[in-house]
Length: 377
Image (cartoon, rainbow, N blue to C red):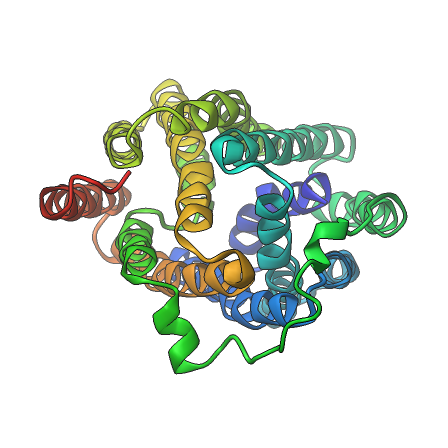
């Protein structure tokens, strides 16, 4: 599915900008809306997976919806159709995301969860760099034909749905509590029972999301640095190769070191990425910034999932992942809109400077939490 999605996502900002005449503000708004849609849906799909005590078929439904959205990109005559396709695709991601993440925790021993989420992120990212590589090949062979690339992206999406439906079985111990009374997970008491440690992680993730606007702006930065159009998707390839190589080692490291210190390290790397991209008028510096961006992703994304899984009760993990993604995604919407507005009204460099400023704010929050309780990982 990542091969399918990343063929489209690596080309979509250029398609909207060059073919449909969208501004950076419009692209930021579309990306923000799309990325905020999935977390809203994750709340309900995660809670539903807790209530039904079944993860697989919700995931299958989500992957199927994502696959069925792909032809709309190929046929889109206007920005409105692109928005519709992006929202449908992100609804599918929302349906599958929390049940899948909870399923990882269900099948993994607690002392190996950092490694498990790191491995999942790493393998997930393999598709994320194969997709842009295919996009480059299609664009070179097809004389910059965006719509041809979008049509080709339909096939791997359908294959992913078939593989999940046929090849994955729900673990038996996901039904261990079948004899207990089922309750609605989205209720005030249930949210309180998630615990203060969990809600601190949600707050940290939300502030962190202010610093992590849409990666569409990395693509736009590469376009401005003089990279030929057909080669711009290689920017996402570079980011995802680094991401894939870093995610598992740092996931294993998260099982042995302070989560707070590792997260602060990831934020420091993101600051370095923002500074490189702010000065990235040459393609070489853009590549450095993009690689650092991928490194910070490898250091932090599996780590945040591990922190949520460790803090949440076992029978409410779906709900916990859903609300974590809801708050983070809502803030991502605001950060992407803000990034696009700064890009258009000030300059591209200012967008990345502001991102670095939000990183500093997150580090200060983490330092204050650490001072309040030295017992938290």
